[in-house]
Image (cartoon, rainbow, N blue to C red; front, side):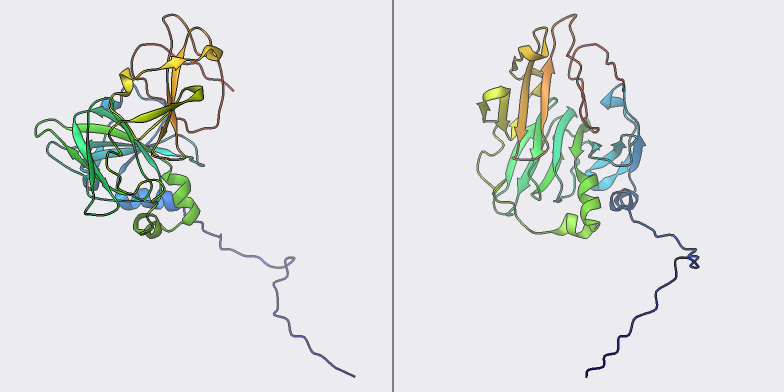
Length: 271
């Protein structure tokens, strides 16, 4: 005959337990904002990106602000950055994607995974490009007298909240060579047009005046191009509508950032 003895740790009785301490969850994205000391704006719409009020953000090259829509579960954010005259950002890399649209000013950006093979390209108002994930980059203002302003739409919020370790986000050394390996002419503006108006490229010199293509399903003679940049998951598109017409009503998840490139109009939103 075998006799066994089992020992169990005493568990609290849920009928009598009376805990007083709440579990504290750390929001890595909000903590990063605090650590950056950057101005955070929570709002839906702005009259002009040139007039968005900025605060100090020296690491980015001068001044800046982060725009968050009024939603806790942020799928992305919008970083508005102004490089001071003759200024530059500090070199950085990160495990989140960033799509850059130049609002004003002229300058250049260097991108690299190997210090010996930097790719540098120039940009101006209306330029659009994406930073390949985890590639090193640095922005430079080409003017010694005027600031240069851009917006960077990123998926930093969900990435930071997924890993909740920002040292990993900013200091991981894994090179995503399938996206960018330092290739020559990577940012020269060449691209390939696919069906469904998809233009695959890594740099658009002038998004305001780039060619668009017919999309009769949207109605009223509207034209459009769908952009795939730097093999990123984050994408964008540009649409144009004739005088006195409108885009057909549609809906999608929260977090789309709309930038009016030209023209006047209005938007209707409803549940």
